[in-house]
Length: 382
Ligand code: 3HC
Image (cartoon, rainbow, N blue to C red; front, side, top):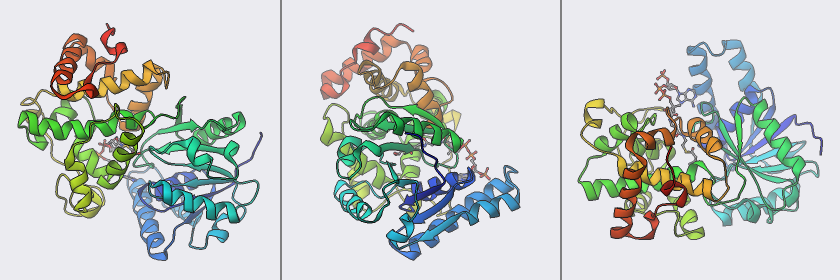
């Protein structure tokens, strides 16, 4: 399958959709951004403008380039009009299988035969989604990371019916938009990065209860002792508690061993404390577009994050054991998708693999099989 991609249609203009539209326009593609209400599109285009202005401010783009990129994105409400002439559709609507079902039925009704389908789903099964459409062989997962404008990773996830040409197209397209693809070889719950990230949010909440630690203590330790660019509560707020909650429910329904949900996430979701975008999540915010929590090395020194490291490493080990990715691909994904400043298994080495495994065994004895150490980790000697 040799295809030439010129026109992209992005469905859904939220946090991910507007960012994917922007990076595609930055690579020279003609982009249509579609949502169900003009007000959503207006807000999305305002965010694109803000992001481009930041890039101008940081001299990554000239004002003329930024204006040209902005003009390559056309916001459209009408679905048929949005899909006219599309070579590639990237769907980034909320993570709800019933909604996706509805959206793909509508899309199938109006899309042209040539249009290839990709979903930016973070956890839903690609094979199942592909089967909702009239072209399962030309359907693939393209999982971008938040913020798509800054995060260099895209996970490429073929479903059982995806043809080989589609995988090549996806890898080439991702490189063309200046990102680095990592192939997720199995359509597992959470793919690669979310398999590590989402359970960690819950573990951080357990650490608060079990160790009587504060959020900034835990977050500072994650940042300064585990080499994450942000704390884990900070990252959860930044990602959105709606996204975290829906991913949790989906991952848990697919595999009970993958995640141990802490009630706090569901509670925040139900209270509509959705994180930075609404000014309140785990933390409170002033409501600016991009706001960070003050985390310090001094606070980091007051909390040992080994339980968090152990859970992250255990899920990472599971991915390697199951053949979802190699250790190298895993580290690449965590570096580019979560901004880890040091390889996860280098941190494991620093804490001592036996200490990490002992921590998991102690947790498993108290709290059950979620913590049972994966054989790869048990045998890991560095
Ligand atoms: N466009 C352009 N600029 C942006 C931006 C955007 N969308 N968002 C933020 N910026 C700007 C900020 O305003 C800031 O500018 P300033 O210096 O003028 O204030 C600058 O970029 C970033 O500066 P910081 O010093 O705060 O940055 P960092 O060095 O920490 O980098 C980061 C920011 C890239 C976000 C980094 O903190 C990071 O990698 N964080 C982790 C993010 C992550 O893990 N994402 C994945 C989440 S999981 C996911 O998305 C999957 C989903 O399925 C759940």
